[in-house]
Length: 198
Image 1: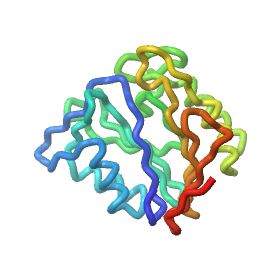
Image 2: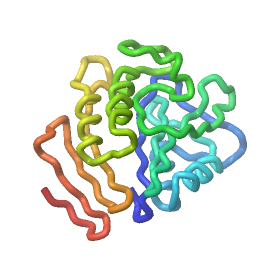
Image 3: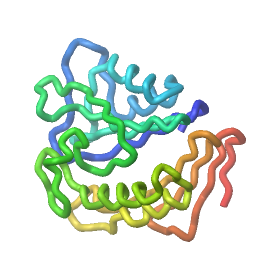
Image 4: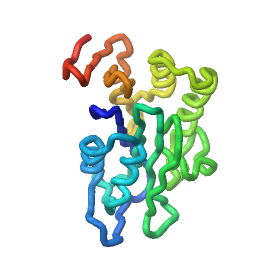
């Protein structure tokens, strides 16, 4: 999260790494996060910034980014796996897991779906919780969704272990963090004071 209230998360996908080659300057996954946090004041600005670069996914994995801002504009940033140039597509969403939102209809629950990814069942759980709240979300809503969608480690599955969960408040510029599904130990962070507390 940055001081303007823009938050960004990166999630692993199952396909081949994005390697755009259009002649624009090249940016890697981690640098894209830094670019957004350093320069974007809104989700729309973040999308425009990322469109100015060729993405080169790092770590032999493919990724997509979930970006939100203080006005509530949430979008998943993906690089179309069916487009040879891996065109950037920004789709408005309220949740993201480890499948292409762009091809949500091809990501079936409780299974791997090739290049389209997996985790649809977790996404559906989150969407159900959010739908029940009809747009009236609280930190408790977010924690309920994160807990219900969390994963325990599964041998051979790099994305199966929920390493951390964070509830960002993009207007108050705060975050609540749980590590390795320890929901009873929440660390809080206030960006304005740059202070962590329990």
